[in-house]
Image (cartoon, rainbow, N blue to C red; front, top):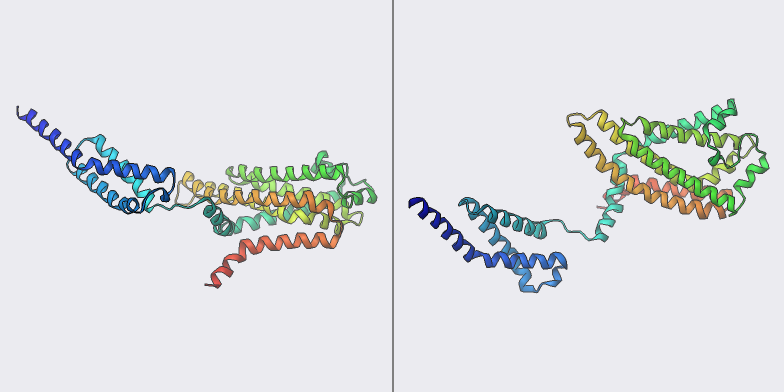
Length: 338
């Protein structure tokens, strides 16, 4: 009889507790549902003012329910309701426009600055690869076919005449040149993705891919320089190349950051180190897609229609200066203005 009486008493307490406060819970839940589906302007001024009051009432109910060990289902319901209220009232709510603005004004440049060691290592590896490719082809032209795929060579080789090579540089927007530009853009995009995606293997594949890409650049440059067209090729490549090669260097840097974090996790576990590195690397890679889109526009339009060497170098140099200022100088100027 005593146990039955105790059970009845608990049930009565629970029923009384619900009866006194459930109306506030339901009202709070209904208001949250409306503002989550629409916007705060969907509520009247009085309803907006009641939100924090109902939130505190729900917190009070949760505290009482936990202290008195009431129904576990009721406690779970109140915990979920209070959590929703907390995220709406105190959580960071940013519009899509704000998030995009934050990415370009802060997140992306900050990620590149964080990767500065890996970025400039990647740039150095590209230069080393270019020197090696140039030297190998200059020493033995048979290296050219081993380094450059026939689809990328586009019929150009060490035996091509100066007139043939020059026609590629100043041929305008003909079908071959447009097709080659599209292929080159696709190739460099693939290099960027691979340099990033394979970085988890202790960064070794990323390093090799960056070196090989530089080696290909050096091999192509050698056959033009041998015909006295090195300066002209530099202008032809620079319109899009300063952006595209910088993007590849950043992609390689992102892969290296992940690989080195896995290889040398420090006090963290390998998974935790990889996750932390991945947040920076992923932000950088989102930006790499933006750079590749810019490079594609420059490659598909500017390089095929602008035939002045001076104009080509000016555009390429201007784009490189723009990226360097954006990544490395913007924060300094902004902080200096404060």
